[in-house]
Length: 158
Image (cartoon, rainbow, N blue to C red; front, side, top):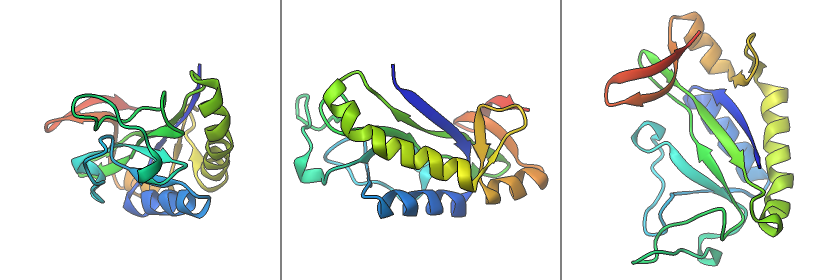
């Protein structure tokens, strides 16, 4: 089943979220073992939050470079970002498909969710949170979207 928390965030919001994650022991890692995470979320927003260092992960495939929350204590992390004029949605997803791994990551997911709920504003329609910088960007006219496909925004959130 699993659970997720969705959000919109500006650059400073994302840095604050990632800083909190680091403070509780999470590491942002690229979705492939042989890659490094790019600090610019707009060039590759999908990654993982890992509870263990990279050397303790179990990549698979041929060559073995793919990572999954079915083999390791990691959570899926779609980093939200701002690319004018769009605010692109992000989320953290916790899976309990593998009970042992879900038990290891659940406390981290709960802490991340609690931090987001305490520090960011719930959108009036519910379902997702808005970071402080994102709120300012929205007030200045930024358009909330689920994702960007090339240069075309997909599914505007109102």
